Image (cartoon, rainbow, N blue to C red; front, side, top):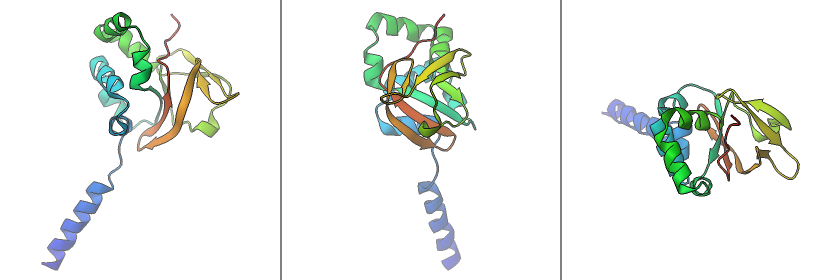
Length: 151
């Protein structure tokens, strides 16, 4: 009986201490509903649930709300373009805020984000409003604007 209780107790502890991937971490935060929908439409959910590590510059729902509705609807309807925009927000590896240096950083999409650190961290002009949100497969830096790759 004691052994069975110990096994149950360990199982419960294991479940509550389970680490979350980038997607689960963002969803749990509550400010990334549009990002989660976009990741699903682009077919990128499983990628960002993968082993990584990834650094994601994650636009909030308020950041997506800045995009004109017609433009956002068109983007959400074009899977290839949506995937390109979303992967432009992702950098390979786990890059913490103190490791971000001014200059260019190559994204998963293939283009480079411009990083500025004077007066706070910015990527392509978007402000990092919250940094270093740890996930088991990388890190999230919250940004206030959706950034778009240069064609």
